[in-house]
Amino acid sequence: MPPANPEKEDAAREDAAREDAAREHAPKAAGAGRAGKTAAQGPSAAAAPESPESPGGREGATGDSGRGLKLHHLRPAPGARTAKTRVGRGEASKGKTAGRGTKGTRARNTMRLGFEGGQMPLYRRVPKLRGFSNAGFGTTYQVVNTGRLAELYPSGGDVTPDDLVARGAIRKGERVKVLADGDLSVALRVSAHAFSASARERITGAGGSVTEL
Image (spheres, rainbow, N blue to C red):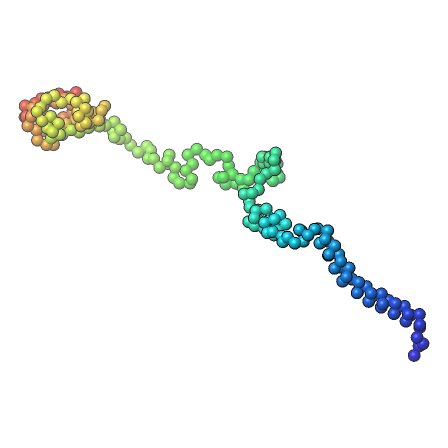
């Protein structure tokens, strides 16, 4: 067994003593530091509890009484103005296709004349070159029957298109044709654009007359 070294033993004992003294001194120093900080802040700061509505509180830190910052609270900085995006100015962001995607109807500026979304267009739906018709050349009349004339003129008299318009029997500016629907027992002098054969007989048979305009 090697002989003990007195110098090393003395150095070890001194180190252990210094460590014990440091451990005993550390809690006292920490307590003194906390006490000094509280004293420096003053008695009001140490005694008053932190209000939840104060800026230092948990809810007050958001600035909206606990509700937090919302999107509608955001505002641009005074004087700030974002420049307009200039599309179609080279192959960069929105430069090549200018945000319109690739091809298709919505990538074009306009659609061709007569395009109806792919359905059969009007110029192909309308029949063409299918013969001739007189339908567009016919004459249209407003019809007045002899029974209606008997109601409008119970005591007889002169019947003209203008007088029929005033009584609400026909529309203004159209031709009038008299037909023999209804009985007629008074003498009427009727002026109209056309008469049926039976209407002529009924009017003249009641003692009246017909005049074709």
